[in-house]
Image (cartoon, rainbow, N blue to C red; front, side):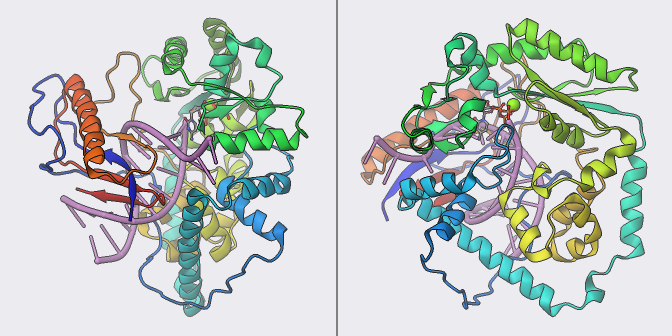
Length: 463
DNA sequence: GCGGATCAC
DNA sequence: TATGGTGATCCGC
Ligand SMILES: Nc1ccn([C@H]2C[C@H](O)[C@@H](COP(=O)(O)OP(=O)(O)OP(=O)(O)O)O2)c(=O)n1
Ligand SMILES: [Mg+2]
């Protein structure tokens, strides 16, 4: 079939600071690859091998409402990002579906979704065939969970600082007149939006076309989505300022996880709440007006979740003694690492929606999910995930990145193209870019991987 | 070790 | 007028 998009490569960091090792320029593959394991978890879970059951009800388009709900699940998933409380999801879903329901992208999403449904059915069947004894809560399991909580009894004070609508906020500094209009950063793809636009359902990772339709239709034509192009130089500058301010509060453990997110681990601190409040004021002043939100807790993961609770321009302390209570009330989707698919598996197979249910059905979780995933979920259920496993630091200040980067890659998307000569040229361009990056960083590779995205959005990888 | 899936930002 | 880019982990094979 006609292919369309290309990407490249995936090497390994050896020893920065020396020897670019100028071998391999481009596509002729060579070398090898690398992998490593840590504690945290995303990725797969069940045994998703062959179960070609095929009694799918196949609800062919009947009620329009129903279909739009499906589109909603595909496109906006958990609609509860900050600033999107209480919006009319039904209406948004209908518009999204009408405007994009036949696009190649949505059709791909539907195929993907059907695979997930198959996984759901497979797990349901496994559950059906199991006896309750297979997934009872063993003493060993509870000992393990208690062990996690004991170990957590050290006295860390984790703080997560997350900038509010970061790219957008940076742009708004020089465009204050857009403050109360629906606006976003990014053209074809929306990187983020302001809170006015979020009321219309416009959010990160949404196609610009859809965002424009949403605003236009939901405002009855009175409003227009304003799109400003991205300017990463600006965001990097602001990010650097933020990092410098925050470093004063925690010179030792401070880690920048992304341009807009910083993790601190200050010790037993008196008056953390006030200190963090001052930190945020300090950030705002130093950046010329950018606000941020913060979470304070015993672990980075809980602090991260807490940082979202009072967004924008707010903070939340989760006291160690109320950690369990906090976690139990949480929809599982709020747990970093639980995405759209994992949420669906938990919901439809286990009837688990919240942290409490996750804990109550811990035996079932252990039975159904693979070890790493189960451990991650169970740790999460007692508020102990993201503990020992440190987050890789983001390339703070200098252009340098962390010391043990596992891969480096470049990719570009373009409109469908089937001419091999042209495709090869694209491939060479991308290869050149990557090679420059590697030289600049003085890293050596071990494996080269080529990624191709077809016109129907299927993705292939070959090493 | 490879390729597909999932996830975060 | 039409859905991004970078880096990481987990799992089955
Ligand atoms: N799929 C995504 C998600 C985010 N970003 C970028 C744009 C955001 O501004 C920045 C930070 O991501 P956040 O999830 O923190 O979102 P915001 O900071 O924009 O909004 P919030 O106020 O909810 O934190 O990362 C992106 O490029 N692509
Ligand atoms: Mg943010």
